[in-house]
Length: 549
Image 1 (cartoon, rainbow, N blue to C red):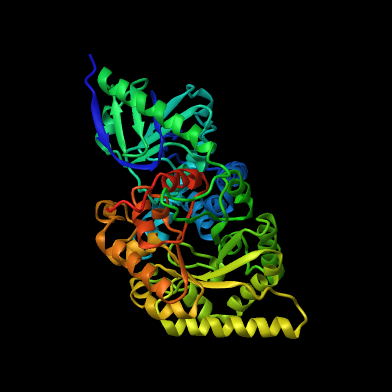
Image 2: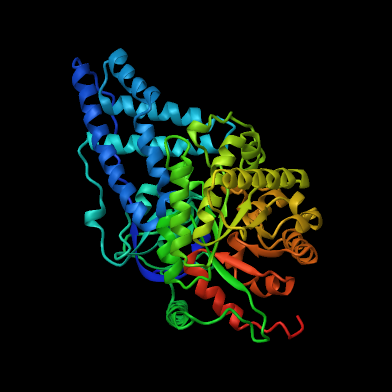
């Protein structure tokens, strides 16, 4: 008789799944060092396997574009670029020539060397490339061994259990066959976790090595994507209780659909706007499908991430015009480029930094390189005549920065006017409250802007001194920390006192445990992933602020 075991990880996509475990085994060929006298032949084999890998990644990229959008699919473009990297290719060919060895061995040694090099770097973005170079190298080695993937042999309606999943493996999961997945390792901020959330696959990350060591193919398993709990071989009491919760959860999802077209009003009559966060034009359909009242965060950096050079004014204008037209007069808030930290773009030629999250990023780049900033602002203002535009500026820490931004905006408007180009006079300008500095001086910022938008992900990171990319800090990165909530409340009070409105666009906006607290603080707008719009609306409509807390 199997005894129930319970494991705890981090839930990254809320839902409950009950099914049979499938222990994921990666298609990894055993690499042996073999001597060869045909170096040219081995190099040709490498080129052929690499070409196949590029084709595979291209197909994965196209699938990712449809399912998770341009910004999240960017990782696969990075993988394709790494395959074409001169240093990587020269290393493989040199090892084949100098050591007279087989291509598999040369690729494996190159992967180890490059991964070690990336891991030793101070830059967290470059450290993350260690996993990427291992991923692409394994793909080449599998192709050299002519081994196909295992997806064709996967059972139906399964829960995938793995040590970890690479982004490409996550995107290739068939949502019609995969109920959920659980990994022993990983961070809730990893590419895998982000992709799971965007694909709507229930997942628990970081369940521990004990989980993987004890799970067997076909075991009954329950995954709670809300709490991060994983039950293996559940007893009848647990199975019945979780089955009821699963049924209730599905009924709630169906009921939420009935909230489409309803107002975001509490029982006592308090109104709040519920908007959506998106990473690209291709996500507009999800915004409209989920009945969001507008777009509270349009991440404009996707235009820079997907380009091989600085996007032109016309490229940007076309994208902004399309999103504004599609939203048909609903508010669209576009954040100016937020490049830097974990979002690197080669053609920006940014120096390596010891602490990139605290370094040259976002508005700091814009103010230091005004020609880039002005091009974006020109495109934004030109597009403003096609809808209801708000522009917000990230990583603000001082009044001086905002005054400089407003001067540049005024200069751009004068420039467009002189050229006879139209723009709207009703564009709202706002700043992101994502540093403690911005929250503390929010009384001075409010009178000179139209709105605040709280970026809770970075605000939590900077307030608690916790790198949100570091999986070892999960337990210390308390998003409900009193200090974080006090800073949000301070910003809300100062916003209203200074004549500005305030929204929240970070992950916490979708945390329904805090919805009532945010409404009591006076938050005017909550901007969430499209899939969470109706869930937050439901919570708002069941809240009564007239009842003393």
